[in-house]
Image (tube, rainbow, N blue to C red; front, side):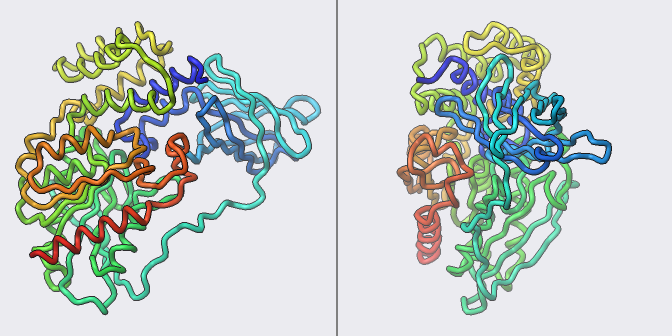
Length: 475
């Protein structure tokens, strides 16, 4: 059974960001940690790196405390949450008399861990917002390695670029196939999902865009990937960007690749977009007839409002949590406000009232302000109001749409139905047992634990490669 507290956590999780597997490094992390945040260090025996798993019903979250004893005898501690891609969260650690018990406070999230040493472990209780959970930490002697990290193709060539448009500078990389493949060759531009991503779309020790790049260049297809605004050497974010601004970044990358005519065939260049990146690919393909093809990896095809309502309900369904029509209406009303209330001040006030009166979650004043700020940001408002249908109807190039059966952020049926209705030349593939990161998972519950599910599946990679080669063979 899932408790009401866990139910509240799940719904709060979904009210924040469309694509939390990628955006959790941003605002969403606050939401994810409201019920799950944990502990830290101690001197002498407590010094070191400690890892444990917080469990609340079906929800699991790994936590890591990094504890150091300072010269004055006090403790320094930070918290990492590997499953959420968050590191170096400041903590306050103190020892009880006798130095065998430790208390670790995480002020940012109003959380506390209290534990005692027992047979080389720290056994204790994690507390936050009235929720108390047992937590056992074990010392990490060696760093975990990821044997699944991709290997570079021998003799591949890579070229670094800085390219500009409208006062924005972006840093990118063109990976070329080995010289054994004929040139000029076909190419793809990779577009990441929401949130600030580097060119690898790095998350939780995974590098899905590097995996895709290394695979495609081994099959004779060049790949261009770039750091989003705010990552690497690219320009910082100004806070007012929307999806259409990021579409201009992808367009600038496309123009750059087209200019590499000695290496790249400009008639065989397309996009591969993940999540919001898939939506961006749709937008650009609608207006630029040079785009030879689009591969959408869970790119939303319904309106932002529809996607977000479905996202909430899908996650509750996955967890086996029953809900009433009045609760569906309560969630829907939040997104209806964002669509219908043009004045930002009035919108904020309406959202505050809805969150205060929520029957799904009791919010503190601080949590209400955090949610209101996130849901009234320029990006979020624009996303909820965005309807991709007019763009989809103008796309003439071939489109491959891949969606995972166990993707609880971008619903497969909702997406594929919309694409079949609106896009003239589309191939739709539902991948069984795949999640939002296109990892093939053992169960639907484990599908949300991205850190443990390995890299993007070989099935996904083969679909992408075969589609691109088929499109190119017909040109």
